[in-house]
Amino acid sequence: MSSPTDTSRHVLVAVAWPYANGLSHLGHIAGCYLPADIFARYHRIAGDRVLMVSGTDAHGTPITVKADQEGVDPAQIVERYHPRFLEQWDRLGISFDLFTTTMTDNHREVTWDLFRRLHAAGYIDTKTTEQFFDPQADRFLPDRYVEGTCPSCGSPDARGDQCDGCGATLDPIDLIDPRSKLTGAVPEPRETEHYFLLLPKLQEELATWLAGREHWRSHVINWAQGFVREGLHDRAITRDLAWGVPIPPELDISTEASEKRIYVWFEAVIGYLSASKEWAQRSGDPDAWKAWWENPEAESYYFIGKDNVPFHAVFWPSYLLGHNTEAERPLNLPTNVPANQYVTFRGAKASKSRNVGKSLLDYLEAYGADELRYALATILPEQADTDLAEDELVRRINDELVATWGNLVNRVLAMTRKNFDGEVPAPGELDERDHQLLATVDEQLAEQARMIEAVELRRALKAALAGAQAANGYLNALEPWQTAKTDRDRTATTLWTALQAINGLKVAFAPFTPFASEKLHGWLGGEGDLVDHGWQRHEVPVGTNLGAPAPLFQKMDEPETD
Image 1 (spheres, rainbow, N blue to C red):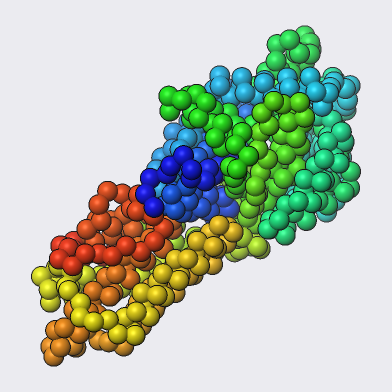
Image 2 (cartoon, rainbow, N blue to C red):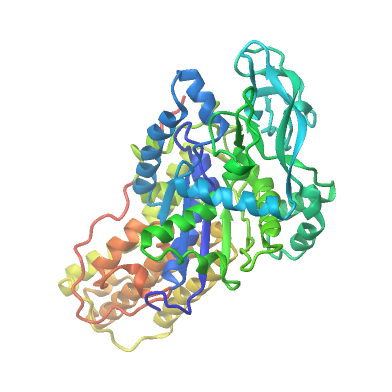
């Protein structure tokens, strides 16, 4: 395979939008950003047409909370953190096609278009409801400005929209002993008018759609189906706020006493569509987004943490179904929502707001990008929460990445340079051991492809490492450092075979350690970029001049203990 063609699969990789209230920590990275990048990189190498989008969520309540604390405009918070997000993605090698923000005119227009369509189809209407009001601050309180005791699990620090303790989706009115995050006062319920998404109208169609979701992770599909079985309720999609996407002008219900905005839980997920359209505009073909959204053969994968399951497996599909009711060209619903569980730090969930877990940029000061990517990929919380310990990250890097894969490359290149002037030698007739190693590498590549397609990324990395272990075992059995003294032909065959195996393994490791694989691609005489050569092992021609051997990865020092 080479470059994608018009007949290639179209794969949308939609990645959770981080709030601009602080830098990402390793829980975020292992939860959704690294898995999304591994998945996208595999599909690009396989020849598929990938569109990977996300952006800074500018309108989340955490941004306004931080702005209030600092006494600045919320836009200043976004403008502070968005460039840092771009820096961390670049340094870690997270390969977005577009990482934008929800502050763009494009995002507002796309949000308005979907709002209008759902309103015209009868899925959005106004209601008078009660919302908490802080009498000391003299203002209505958004959900995250209210904290209290969770009615489901009793956690004392539940937010007005969700409880981190049990994952329950909440309404501020449901909280026990609510308190204002602004002043600590007991908030008062007061009547206010808002727009609601009429979810019960979509419940039956959503339940039918969920019933057809095959191969979803059990914790995702079970949660989504259970949520729907309990019965959907009308859900407010506007709030009394001064920051956020306005309501479409002709539908605005703001009053002198209350300014309205579309609430972030509704508009942020629309960012996947708006970012796709923005990417198309930037590419010079404004209709290019349609290949991923209106093509029924296209696939879409939403990489999120488990706390975002309701928004991506229930709410977002609901308003896509509502949009499609009378749409001439329906929009694609998610193919899969491979939500990861949590990464914990000594038993506590990583949290920007609670300062649990160092930022990604802090880690990148100590770890190389490939080394950190590899270590995190070994502990991805795909099926259960994973506790992160720095000594385990260091062990994975030193004992597996450096000692097994990096050392394999270094010693084969070094022996080839020493014995054959750094050129790929001509092999003799291959025996069963040589054929077996190459067959193992090819089989592992095929097995990896199946695993990554199923978003089983930890298993896919284990398959790559198993290939490297097989190559090391082959060398240990044939001992080319010994046969170089007695049998030049056998040494040539051994090193030729090992180089061919390494050329396949560089592909196997490429989604996980892209910088090293690209470097190795050049050392082995590969032309152009590795991504253009397909998910397969190519033969390194005899006579190819190899790059000078150098360590692919850096061994890490053991972390200091408390």
